[in-house]
Image (cartoon, rainbow, N blue to C red; front, side, top):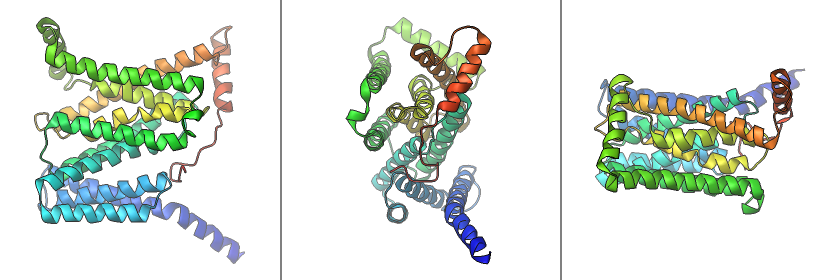
Length: 341
């Protein structure tokens, strides 16, 4: 009896103690970063918090993707400490980029399949919270940046890293299938169109159109406190919500989730612009999350309608059909605290 009890205690310790320790490190790092923002406490709190969060996130990403968490976590801490000691602007900026990218990729990889849309909402919130911790750590290194270049660089690196990991999780390109290929193409076109349209509008847009759009942005900022970031609400969050919903049914959902890096990277670099107040940045992310979840719900329902997941013949039968479909969505995946590979 004592041997069985000991084995149970050991298994509980092995499964929960590392996660508890990780949560304590992240919470301590975030608390230090918040104190540095207030500011309260010594000047070194911001750097120490940034190093703690960067190390914890690197450890978690390596563990989640089947790497060596101790090696990469320790390496991230050593690099962070060296950056703070040397105190060079280029090194601080590089550490900020690394932290932002790691947080963005971890936000996507930390999600689990969602059989129902409320669970998909939960996964999007988890991803955004991870990105928010990365946002605090990113500015904790006090980078010297050009905001637009920093945003493009972190977004591109996070998206590329997500696709590299998803390539392995999705069993390579041959695991895409026709449906997955269409989704990736549509997502890529939507991403390119969003970025290209925003850039062309900023540089060459008609003055009247630009003025109207800026007036809408100003109205939202004056009456609502912020304007939702388009890359979060139009692409990132809908892709992540639809992706985790699809992952409960097909592994091609990972390819959709990769586009969720558009949201997590935007959250992770949301505080780098000194011209925008912290409250407005937080509200912008919150509004983007809400709008994105609404669009994601529409996409999921359209997918169910087109694939025949919803039965015809009345609202009651439709609800019963959705419940049956959710109960059958049992594609296995490792738990959130376990390695995917």
